[in-house]
Amino acid sequence: MANWRQLGAIWQLRPAEPTGLIEFIGGSYLAATPQISYRRLLEDLAADGLAVHAWAYVPGFDHQRQARDAWSAFRSARRQLEERCGALAAPLRLGHSLGCKLHLLAPDGGRGSRALVALSFNNFNADRSIPLLGELAPRLGVETEFSPSPAETLRLISRHYQQERNLVVRFGRDELDQSGDLIQALRERPSDASSTLELPGDHLTPASAGLRRSFLGDWADDPKRVAVIRQLSRTIGEAIRP
Image (tube, rainbow, N blue to C red):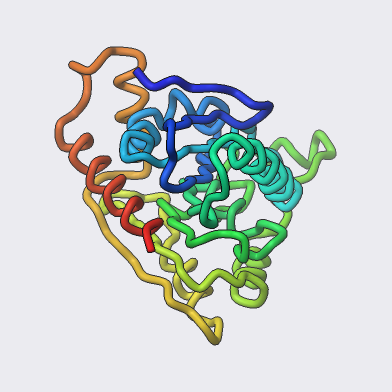
C-alpha cells in the first residue's frame, strides 16, 4: 500500500529515488481528498518512480486566487522534496476538469513546468457548474460567476500561457468535456506544440477507479477502467521523460 504523507494542502507520494515529479490538481469536490479520489492513477505514477504532489482544495469562485495558492503550495513542497532527494527536472503538471484550468492560470504561465497533461478540461460558467445558483444568487446577493469567466479564461490562455508542450486528453463518453475550446485557445499562440488524445471512458474515469478501490477493495475495480488508467499513467510517464 502506498505511503501517503500530508504537507499542508499537499498530499505526497515519495519514491526513495524519484525520477521526476508530478504536480496534480483534481476537479471539483473530488479534489478535497485527492489521495482517495484519484488513488489508482496517482499510485500507478508513483509505482513508476515518480514523486506525486497533489493539491487538496474546495473550489471557490476566485479561480485566479486558487491557481496562485496551488502554485505557491507546489513550489514549497518541491523545495522540501529537493532538499531530501536532490535537484529534479521541472515537474509535469497534471490536471483533471477544473484542475486543468487552475494549472493554466498559474502565475508563471507554465514556464516552470516540463509540460501539462490536461484531462477532461472543463470551463463551464458558475450557473451550470453549481445547480440553482442562477436562481438563488441574486436573492442572496452573492457573486454569480467565476473569476476569470470562461471567455476570459480562454483569452488568458491564448495570450499569456507560455508552456508549448501540452497533452489534452478527452474521454469518449464525457459530456462535460470542453477540450475543443482549450485546443483552439492553445493553437492561437505563435509557438504551440500541443497534442490531443482520446481514450474510452467518461468524465469520472480518472477518479472512479480510485474511489471504488478505496471504499470497496480491489475486487470492485472495473477491468476496463483499470486498463484505461494504466494506459493513461504510461502516457503521462512518457510525457515527463526527456
